[in-house]
Length: 152
Image 1 (tube, rainbow, N blue to C red):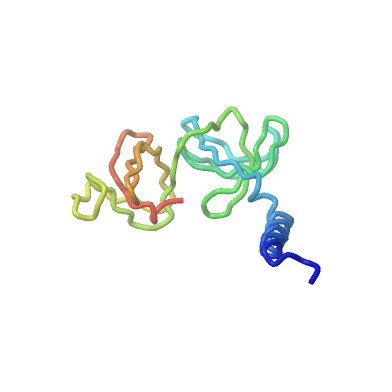
Image 2: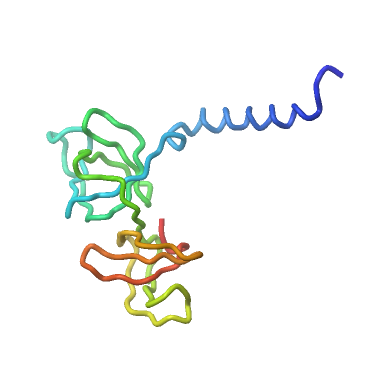
């Protein structure tokens, strides 16, 4: 035999990684940022002359997939894409609800009282993590705990 049996699995792993990165390059370089302004205009392209296609509120998380000058091309939790000016985003730990009727509780567990319920698409700043639970605060000041399976 002309190969070492211990090296072959490592070689296969390297080939799989190369194949993954070749077909998913955006996942390799994706950076997670969040809207830091009260409202962020999402545009159809990089530049103020491009149409505003929707608006997002403070703490909305974005996965950056391309940078062009002062503009970031991003993907959100619903796989929607758009462009936002870099002055409107920053490195802030945030999450967004990905399910309907997410219960926000007084503590990290189902035994704690539900203090309010939110719909899909509500962004929150992450204050603390405890196991599978996240202490969050909305831009309006409301805060509580929710389970990490409910957010992106």
